[in-house]
Image 1 (tube, rainbow, N blue to C red):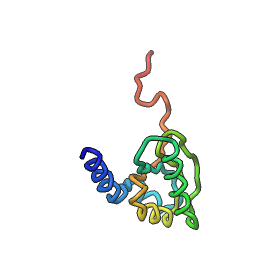
Image 2 (image 1 turned 60 degrees about the horizontal axis):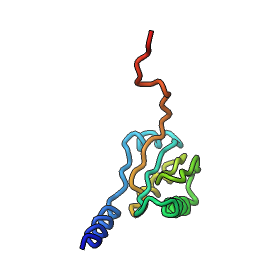
Image 3 (image 1 turned 90 degrees about the vertical axis):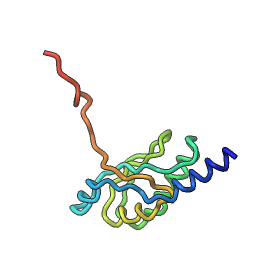
Length: 115
């Protein structure tokens, strides 16, 4: 019974549209942007992560998407995308959970500096 409830919850989660951060939408209008794509995986094992990454990249073929980095132990892809690639990502609710800006944050940002 618990397994059936978990399966229903996962299928409901997989039916949600991907969350596209507003700053991604604004930035992509001006040209290609670097983003992090959060993938939906049912288990946290490397093979399911790799399969979801492969499928997302396969579906992005023919757009201006460029792979920046694959993560072997996290359900993420770092991509450079254009507007057609963003539209294609939005059409993948079964494997894409979120698209957000990939920001570089310096290590000392947010820390107080000692005199």
